[in-house]
Image 1: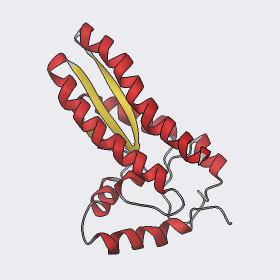
Image 2: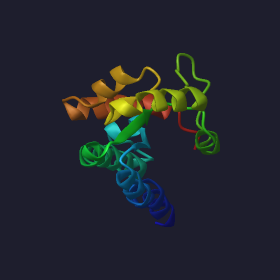
Image 3: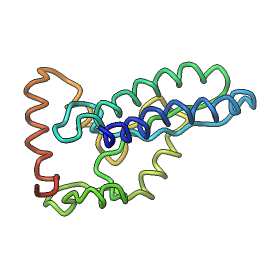
Image 4: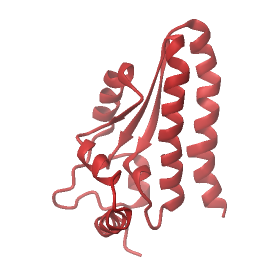
Length: 159
């Protein structure tokens, strides 16, 4: 339960606190931007990381609402949706990032893409993963969720 709470604290509680804190300052100034980090994992349920996936889904919907709320005040909001990105968290998780055909983005490239797309919120899917996001958003859900689960199993560390 403690590890689940850590995920919720990082991806929901902090996601609420930071825009509240910084957004108020940007709103008062009448300009600026909030760049929030999202994940393709938030487009459908995943075994082994269901809490993370749910938290990332929350983040996307939250960012869309913030985008609407802050736009009249000159503040841009963008949820930058990442696919597989070579981050320290991915390395700590032991994910297999060397799979043939796996498109792994570099953090610097993704960050640059996010800053470039910030004025065009509310959501941008980075690293050429737009088609994957659209495919994961459709129906029938049972088929999409099962297919994604099968593909994701190869990424997970051996248990």
